[in-house]
Amino acid sequence: MVGKTKQFLSFVLPGVIKPVRILWNEMMGFIFLCLGLIPLPSAIRAYRDYADGGQGMFRLVLTGIFCSVMLYFGVSSFLKAKRIGKS
Image (cartoon, rainbow, N blue to C red; front, side, top):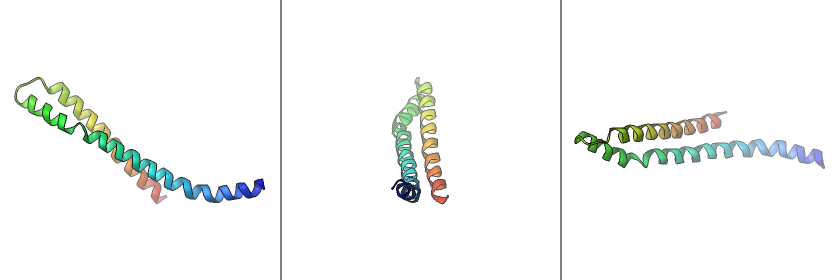
């Protein structure tokens, strides 16, 4: 019975784990892209404030770094899902 269970799991698990990994990476990519796009209105306001001679430079740089990092993580997660799907 243990041998049959081991054989069944060795046959089924590779076919289940691969799509789950792809789906996980795609979901994480979507979440990171959303996290990167949410602060864009704040970045636009900070840019307008800075362009009008205000004190928005630090906020603009910080928001830009945050958006860039989150968008990078999102795109790299989608690329990783694509790479997993090809293998």
